[in-house]
Length: 595
Image (cartoon, rainbow, N blue to C red; front, side, top):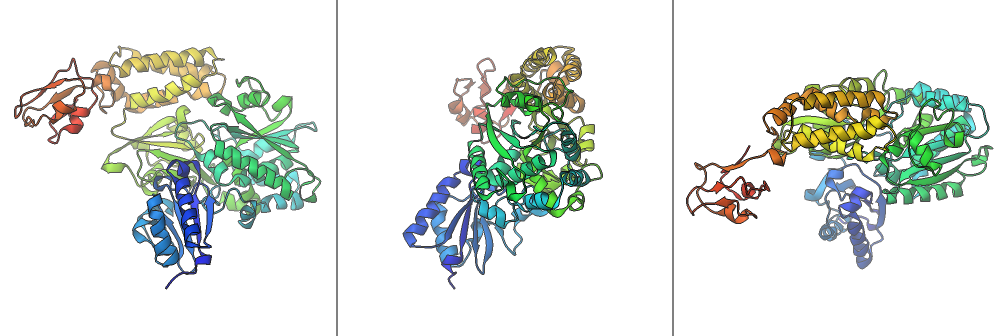
C-alpha cells in the first residue's frame, strides 16, 4: 500500500557536523528527487540531532509509519529512500538507525539521556520562529513578564539549583541576584558563547539547533536583573551559529519578543551579537568584557566581580549558552521539576560533547549524578575495536584526565573536582590503551600555552617551561628530576595565576602524573613509551621466525631502511628508519615488531 505523499516530512540534520559529513548535498538530492517526481513531500532542515557518529542523518515521518531515522545517508541512497519509503510506504530497514516502535541498537544512545537543554534538538527548524513557538517556545518569557516579578524569577532560579554550566558551577540564581541588587539604572546581560575547548561543541550545537531558547533565557535574565541591553559573544569560527542567531534576533523582534515594550509588559530589551576573534582566554568573563568593549581580551583582578562592575563599569550578568537554554524550561515547568533531576548539590542535566575513542560519539544530555561508566559504555557504546578504556579528559584543556580506577564516580561538580579534573563546559574526550598520557598532557598544555594572554609571568613563562620539559620527555631526552619539576611548576602556576586559564592550565599534566606516574617514569628513565605512541622512543625490528621474505615491507619502506633477500628474513636499519609504520602495515604475517 502506498503512503500518502503529501503527509510525509523529510528532515535533514544541517548542523556543522552534518554539513561537514555531506548533509547539504543530501538535502539538495532530496529536493531534486522531489522536483523530478512531482512530489509535494515537505523537506525540512533541523540542527544537530545528536548522533554525530551517524551523520548525515535524515528523518522521514510518514502518516501510518511513524518516524524513521536514516544514518550515514549518501546522495546515492536518496532515490531509494524516496522510491521505497516515501512512495512505496516501506522503510529501508538496512539504512535505518531509529524506527518508531522498534528497538534498534542505536536506541541505547538515548536510553539514559534526559533532554531539557536539547529538548528541541533535531525536532524543529532552527530558522523558523513558528516551529519554536509550536514546540512551547516563549511560554517561559510570557509567564515571566506577565505573571512573575523579577524577585520571583530570581527565587525560582535559586530553588531550581541550576549552576552555571560554563565550568565553575556557580549558582545561577545567586549570580542573578547579585546583579539585580546592584544600584543603578544601566545593567547588562551577556551570553558567553566563546566555546574554545578542543573536542567541545555543546554551545555551537545549541546555537545552531535552537537559538531562540538562548534568546528567551537571556531575555528572562535581563528582566530579572533589570537590564535593557545584552550581548551574545560568539566565536567568529561558528558562522552557521552566528547566522542563525542573527536571524532569530530579527524574527524575535518582529514578533515582539525582543525590542520595545515586549508583550506589552513595559519591559524593553535589545540584543547584539559580538563576534570574537578566537582567543581562548576570552572565555574568561573579565577578558570577554574587555573584548566587547573593544579592548584586548585580557583578564583583570577580581573583585570587583562583573555583577558589581562589569561591562563599561556597570553591573553585568554573564552565563554561558547552556545555562541560559535551561532557563525557559525552568520558568515554564517550575523549579521543583528541574531540581527533581540530579544530585543534592548538582541539580538538573548536563550536556556533553562525547568524543575520542568511543563507539557512539556525539552530543548527549544526561542527568547529573550518572556515572562516568554509564555515559561511556551505555550511552557511548564503549571503546571501538574491543580496546581497553584508559582515561577520559574532562573539562577541556584546563581539565584533567580521570583514569579507569575512577570510572564509577558520579558526574557532579564535587565528585569530578575530587579527581583533580573539572566539569568544565562539557568536553569529554575518551582515550583507549593506545593513548600516551604524557603526550596527551603535552598536547593540552601546548594549547593553553599558545592561548595564554601573557599577562601573568607564571602562566606565560611557567607553561612554556613545562611544555619544554614535556617535549623533551616525549622525544626521549627526559632527565632525572623532570617529573618533580613539572609538579613544582604546575603547583606554582595554579597558585599564582590571575585567571581561570592559568589556574587550571597545569591540570592535564598534574592529573596524568598523579594517575600515570609509571608512564612518565618509563619515558624518562627507560626511554620507552608504553603506549607505543611517541615516535622518537619507538624501535622497529623484524622477527626472523615470522618473516618469510615476501619483500612487501621492502617495497613499502619509503627510505630504503628494510633489506633482505627474497624468502629470507629481512632486517631494518634503525639508523635509516623514520618510524613511519609503513612496513608494519604492509606485513601480513605480523613479523614487524614495534617496541
